[in-house]
Image (cartoon, rainbow, N blue to C red):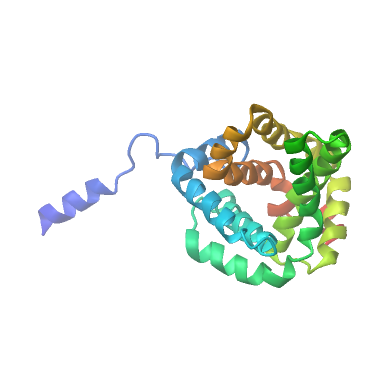
Length: 220
């Protein structure tokens, strides 16, 4: 028994690289989550895509994806299927108005595919709608408001936190670069890219959704 206790004690001693807590936010947090949970992000992206196939379930699927990414950002771990499924069920009706915003990125993608003459306008509206989606689906996932009330709250948060909104151009630019490379570049977007972009946006909006602030309370 004494030998077993010694071995168990050594097993739980802190080793190299684990003597300090993981980074709480910023690029270091992004690198920590990406390096430790990359496989989960791949599974999560595929799961969200599969659950979006009926189209009208896309907002609920994005709620599930956002909820899992929120857990990774805030807690550093998640129960992938359970957390996704619970958020999907709760957001099935609550997030349905999100289809209104998702139409614009879809139309922008279609205009880009056929090189439509109105492509610049379609891309502009699609980019604006995508920026609002970065605010909207965390609100749906957290259940702070329901229906179209979340849309107005998302607009308010985007305007009041305009510096953070400008930073959201980073994941938006990454998405634009992927589309510019061609259809084949959609493969990494499906296999992990969607969740990585969501993770990136949540870390940029960390003070908005994970810290109490007067700006946030004014909108919620």
